[in-house]
Image 1 (cartoon, rainbow, N blue to C red):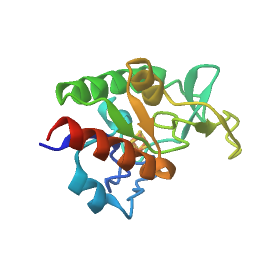
Image 2: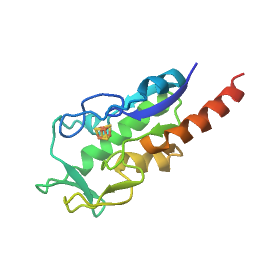
Image 3: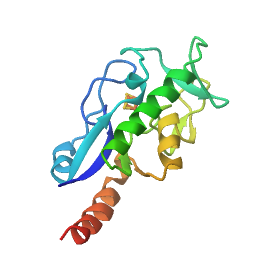
Image 4: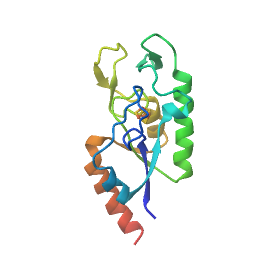
Length: 156
Ligand code: SF4
């Protein structure tokens, strides 16, 4: 059995981003060979439509550019996604950067001006609090290295 890995659904090719696009990773097939991919989109799980208004984190809330507060669906969707991940015995995640849900090292600063700051989105924060190890598209080498080695020795 392969090691389960949560992956932001947009990185796995689902057109679930706010603008209806995906962010398909070129190395998805290689990841699929090593991991059991669990593609989750916390915003869709929170009941939000696609496409949807662009949202950013503002003072620990999630607001759209128009000022609509989406904190509740973001939190609810993140909890649902966590439950699905846990049901698969998963403790690692590869998450899309810059998203107010999935961003794990940087997010937009809440001014809707395209400015990035250090920080994490609602889903990334929840997973980290629950003990998940988080990776980004920039740290896929580390993800592969850490998990293929330990997985291989544990399951031999
Ligand atoms: Fe991708 Fe996460 Fe945004 Fe869904 S919530 S579109 S999985 S970055």
